[in-house]
Amino acid sequence: MIKKLRTLNARLREELRVPGFKKAFDEEDLPARLALQIAKLRESKGLTQRALARKLHISQQALSQLEDPSSARYTLRTLQRLAAALERRLARIIHERVANIKLLAIGAL
Image (cartoon, rainbow, N blue to C red; front, side, top):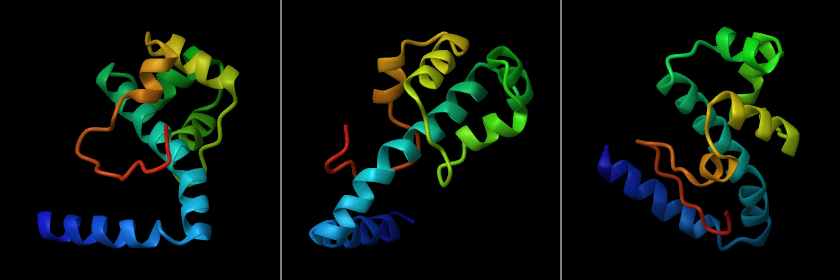
């Protein structure tokens, strides 16, 4: 598993040298990290998607989309509401790393 991760990281470093790839990666990296971080924080609080959705006054399906790295898009207001519901500071949510997931953050915050 570690060897595969090293190979993936080496390939990603190569691909990030390609301007078009790097631009696309940079655009998707932070939203994907946020989606995973939100799910992790929700689970660490012992909340189901339904329970957190109720706190946010949104549907469980809407929260599911916020936690989906492939479809997550956020407004600042949404992030502020998520932080309040999860009893976290917004800056901390953005900067915390997701445990057990190693993504290169070249060019990301």
